[in-house]
Length: 445
Image 1 (cartoon, rainbow, N blue to C red):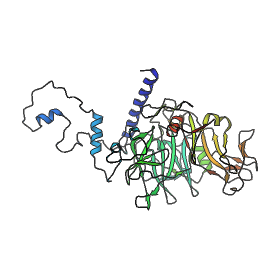
Image 2: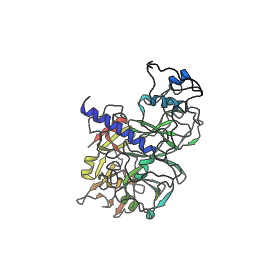
Image 3: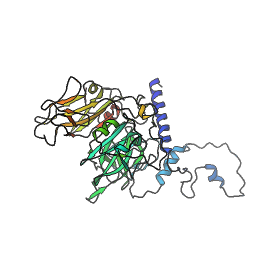
């Protein structure tokens, strides 16, 4: 075995152990697989032969070798598959592997692999509470936070909470929303949690963690049908809702100081009061620079970039675009033409945001900056696209009015001050994760 392969396997084992340790905090005790066995069923050949009634003489010891005796993990999976679920056609692992139960799957079902935890072993936040910006004294300026604005109302979700829960089931202005974060692929994705149900009507979903990964990314399940959903695209890939799509909402990971200055009226997610998780610490220390866990990545890496290079992934109609953040950081702005007469797609970068995946404490993470993706126009200027550039001071300005724009797409100075560029959904993620989902992606330097 090569040295690089040894390192990859070691990292995978360490990650699995870390994930297991992380989800053990605040989790209900796991029932031993033997206790979950069906009545009359045992996992001990000796018990099966001799029985366990009081007063029975023990059988004489033998040297019989039991061939192919299932290991603890196999027995635990078998016990989990026998557990009763609250829905009739659950696809929760390992049930997703049963073609008789689920004859169709939109991805190779064998590439949906265990990440270590059981379903809901990493608990979602289902009844979130929020505080005003001015009440928050436990976030450092450079700590990363996810920001989502819907109908003029902004929510801020600190990474130090998301990294321990991965899903927040929320409601913003009456709109059900799932804010999700996958630490292993370093991606924040927000979804509209309403889909068309089997009966043709609206079905509001709430989500939990399945304990499984696809291409090293979170696999969610909905609690209404227990279908499995992939994190990068919000598609039900197996189960009752097979083929359903969640609408992706424009969310971004920025620094706490940028978020609070851009949105002083926002509501900030509270740390759950009933949790003893060590918020602010990193459950995957040094993952920022470690190689990706090969046990969780089931396709060959794309050699165009190093696996852990950060990219900005954009779904633009039938186009899949990845912007190399190294080049973006040199200029702070990347413009992409999307069609004749159409406003440019602009990708903005700003320094200062810490990585949530480096070292032992999030606030001490290496600076990686933050990005925003927008159409170069505003609601008020839809018929007259803006032309953005970077001036001699490094500020992003529009050539028509000279207004200055920040990474949140807000005009902070000049004639257009107070206006906002039209945001687009994007993924700020690692190259191995984006290219694994989208092998045909364009790569823009």
